[in-house]
Length: 217
Image (tube, rainbow, N blue to C red; front, side):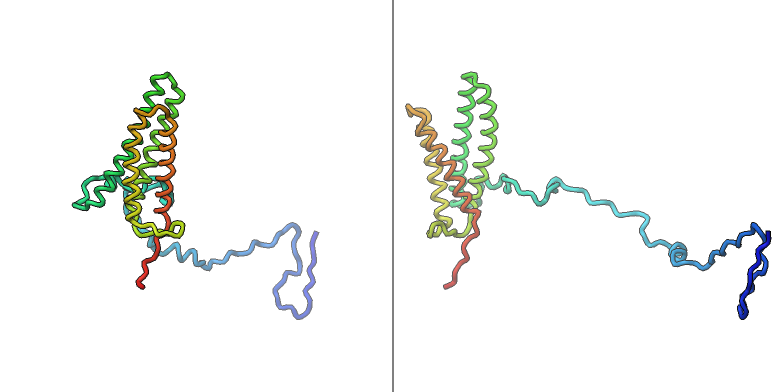
């Protein structure tokens, strides 16, 4: 069946008056204009074909650079070679005495637990021995390397006070050896032991405070 299309007057578009049946309009012609993407594809790439080698990570690199742990110092903080600094030498000797006595008493406690077949206390004692060793070592280094003065309860605490504390700590721990072997009761030993643990941590905590600014007046 034929279809008739009327063209209004004045229309200059060449329309077909008669459209055959079952005949579709021809598909639109695609534009042959080149897009900017064609121009980009035709240009040579400036990306390098070979990349420079990645830098090798050293053993000092950490997976968590923002993490902070309780061992921010090296073993040189315990060296007795102080290049003639006698004050620093005395501090480190006091540090060694305190740490050695506390480690010795830890080991004696482990031996007694093992000798008495207290295996549960022996295992727990090993854990506390390791933790106690590193914790006290960390505190002592912080006390020995503190600089400046801090205001504590209205009193200025400076380097001289920290030196006196280290010396007193060494003397008290030497006294703990005599209490351990000659005292009839363990009450005095345990009281002194845990009391010094608290004092050492308190001194380290004070060294972490911001030092006072030096006045020029």
